[in-house]
Image 1 (cartoon, rainbow, N blue to C red):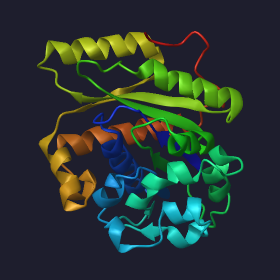
Image 2: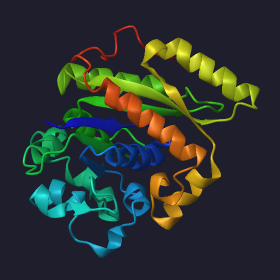
Image 3: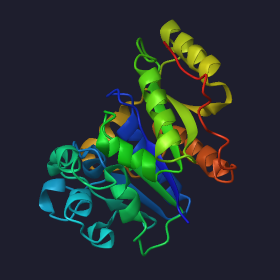
Image 4: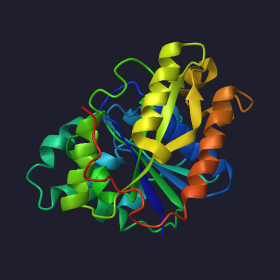
Length: 269
C-alpha cells in the first residue's frame, strides 16, 4: 500500500509546489515508485514536471468531477519511477461542483482506491487554501507535510491549518499524522531566518525535519524548464537539500500510525 503524503499550507509562496516536485523526484531517483498528484488549480507542479495542463482532457478534474477512471489520467514523466496525475485550470470550479456531492470530502480517497499500479509513495500538492480540494487531500492522506518559509509572518495562519488538521482527524480521517515540518527559503546570513527557524523548532519540536531548504537560484529556475532539480542541476545545493529530505521521509516510512497526530493543545496565536 502506498504511503500518501499531502503537502499543505494555506499560505502561498512557502515552497509547497517546489517541495512536491522535488521530493517526489528525489524519492523516484532512489528507485521507489512514486505518483505526484497535483490538486492545485494553478497546476504548477504539473508544468514543473514538464507537462502542459492545457493539452489534456485527462486530469484530476475529470477524475473528481466526471468520475473518470483514475488510471486513465496518470501519465509518465522523464523519471522512470515517477508518474504524474496532472491538474487543470478547470479544477478551480471543482470547489463549487463538489459542494453538492455525497461524501464530498471523500471523493479523492475513493478514486485512489481504484489505482491499479502499486506505488510506494503518493505526494499530493495542495492548493494554498483550506477549501474542499485540500480537505479531500487531507482525508485521503496518511500524513501531511507542512513547508514553512523562514521569513517574517512565517507562523501567521498556522493555527488555522493546525485546527483544520485537528478537525479532519476528528471527523474525516482519524489516522492523519503530521509527517513533518520543512523549513524553506532559509538564509543563514539573516538573523530573521535563524530566529524563525529557532521559533519553529521550539513550537514543533521533533516534528521539524533536520533538512533545511535554503534559497537557491537553480531551484528557482528549474520549473521554468519543466524539470525537477535532480534533472536540471544534480550538483546544486537545492538538489542536495531535497535528496537529504527524501532520505528523512524514507526513514519515516516505518513510523507507527498516530505518532504524528496533532495534540489537542497544539496551536499558535
